[in-house]
Length: 168
Image 1 (tube, helix red, strand yellow):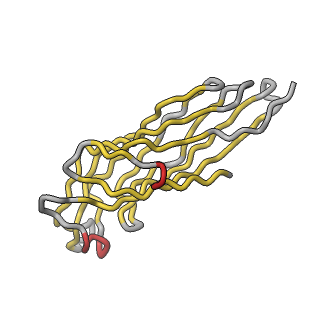
Image 2 (cartoon, one colour; image 1 turned 180 degrees about the horizontal axis):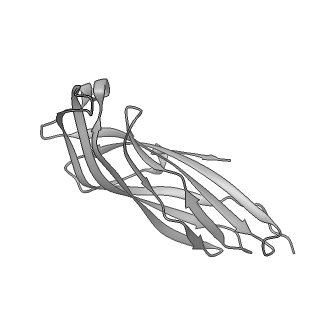
């Protein structure tokens, strides 16, 4: 009885912005700058193609970046996924009064058409135990998605073309 080495698949589906506020403020040392506060959730689908074993899935930090500055951080809770199954997973991303310094110059604070270019960056790790704990299979998938989020719309779909998936 053998099992082929199969990676799990990850597809970022949508991001739901509950709150997104951008305004002027000062950082902890008193430097005036633009500040961002946000609360959102990222929905993704994880698929386990293995026919012989389930996987234990965990993640590193799920970061939401604006111009290479992390404006929000969240994490996917650890869970077990049975073989040959799909699962919808969500991560709550939160950032409060994050200073943008010079990167916030291009961010419009008011107007009718407010779209914010963001990058979603995360890594999922799956671990499968084939014969008890005798054989352990580990896979890492790093996903980076460049999206434009409308601050006034509640949910923004993430097209598959916008995401780069790196398997390790």
